[in-house]
Length: 179
Length: 291
Image 1 (cartoon, each protein chain N blue to C red):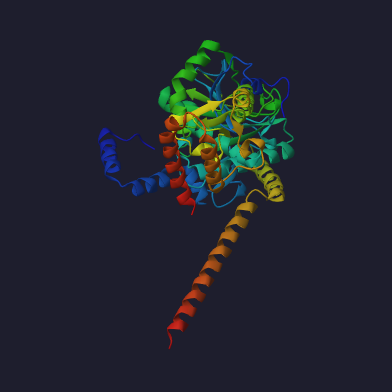
Image 2: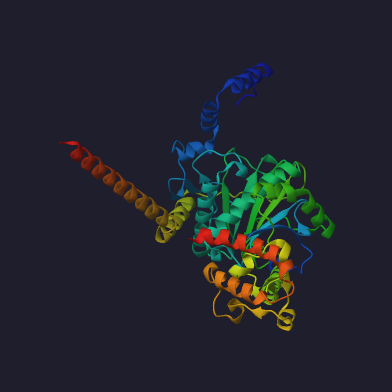
């Protein structure tokens, strides 16, 4: 699924001047000409997804892992003193390209880049209410750990079966030994 | 807390040097405020918790609904976090972001990670900020600047090798266009291959390349013919060419005999003989294998 005006999809079709650094069947790493600091690189999924919520779990994971590795590369190659990993998800968050992406921004002391928000004072009551609202909604979802548990349960069952088989084998063997 | 003196500092450094990795980890955990929050020694406003991670509300948030997502194990920066944990954190991040969009009625979310003090990291515990956003809220004040295409090229050349190494050295996938071309080539290539026939210098039949007879022709006698050449020559097509079936080695012998019979009246008989003997020997060898 490709939109006509997606800058990142254009990179893949070779239309853009953006430098493509790495790609595999799921993840693409590129260097854009727009950046917060020199040396910034961008990680995005090969397939077109506009926002984080549309990206399949497996692809999000692969992108994050690639971002971690890219962060390490930025540390080592550019001798950065820090990195910021930034996902701007949605127009309200300042997303410029309609294609989900993770930015890796190399940082140095005194680089004059201001990504830091102004912290707010908030009343404990307000915090309590927000926490309650959010955790209620999270509980409603409650599905993002469920598959794992199932897998674990399956594995456990398998183990049990194996153990049972072993037990039977042992029993039958010992029975055979009895004259 | 008063500033430690030089001596105290030195003592500390020596102590840390002599510590085992486990002891160091223990010390880090004692010193890390987020490890204490995870151990419930410091109260927090929990949003979500499972065996690998904990999501709490920031007590000095950028905006209402600002979540911190922490791995329960202590890692200082992102490159230290194992893939398995990152995988889980990204899935939880995705779901929490969805919840923020709904509950905080946000137009978007920002996921923010700071690695190192220069990037604005305040505590020695890796975590993700999840911030609900609204257009014009100014939470991330900076804007991207135009660095120019040259900069992008420099970045690529500098980092490419390292990144490929870290990501498992996978080769770049060719563009889809070139892929298509390759596909075309691949499709075109086998076609002329079918038109090629093989024969021996002295033989009176020609074969497809894959025919059992063709396999037995010694290299020095092998002659490759195009379809036209084969049809023009006096040689007859083998059953493999007419498409009946590719003969196995057994019927080959009868053909060989036929060839011998036909060859008898020819004048070239004497010249051909030694070559034939060679051919027959190699055929017999392979035929023996089948028995």
